[in-house]
Length: 74
Image 1 (cartoon, one colour):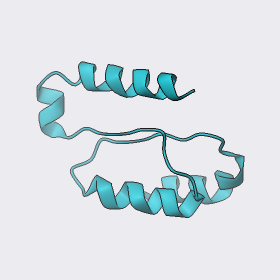
Image 2 (image 1 turned 90 degrees about the vertical axis):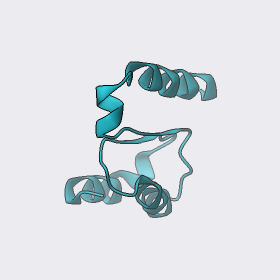
Image 3 (image 1 turned 135 degrees about the vertical axis):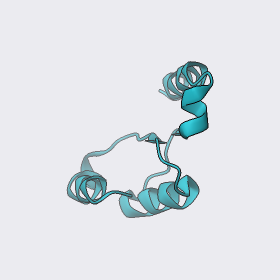
């Protein structure tokens, strides 16, 4: 997790009602998402991880599905 995201989550964790996490990195997103969840004490409604290969292929459908799943939870 980047330093700015870490600082943002720490500063605002009490303000979140619902969260969803996404990543555009090649790092281990599962660990990052777990750390984010622990930090704010909230389980995300959805997660999305996109890597370099996803951007070469059809990433739009993954983003659409991510957004629709969040919408369905609300």
